Amino acid sequence: MRVLVGKYSGKFDGENFDHLKNFYHMVPPLTLNYIQSLLIAKEKLLKKNFKGGYISDDGFILGLAFIIEILGQKDQLRSVYWFSEVQKGLKEEVEEYTKKTQQVKDDSQKVKEEFRDDESIELGLYLRQKKGFLDEFELLDNGYRAAQILFRDTNIKEQNFYLTNEEA
Image (cartoon, rainbow, N blue to C red):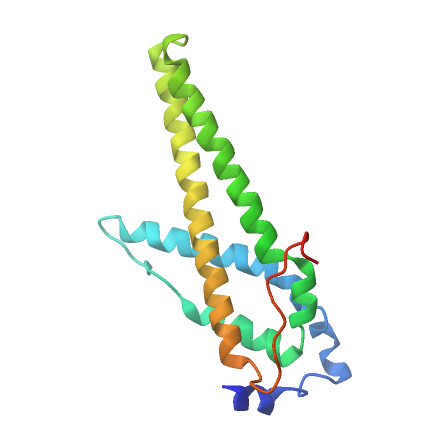
């Protein structure tokens, strides 16, 4: 795979490709869109007449890693702290909604039964959605790490790609 990267590296350096100099800024919305479409496709698999459902699409991750590598933007993407910060934020949200769900269960005697059930169902659905998004984002992160290994120059020792804000 490194040969493929070597073949395309430098081909996008001219002034005709100035628009690609900030490609790494597109990674956050692209990854969010990828995960949302993947979750929708997985949800379609559970329905009776599923059309357009699929389990995973690793081609996106591999393509993203390849483009970042040939454009030489690993350091710029690393400086955004995208993967670590999203996971941190999602984990905090999951923890928050887990506490709220538990609080609703604990307050069951104080609130009318019908309102408590509606609120706990809503919180449970939102918590399940956030956990699913977090799981898919972690899978995306792991897939991206694996794809980076494919394109790594074996002569150069890689830095830790996944530094967090606190470690930098």
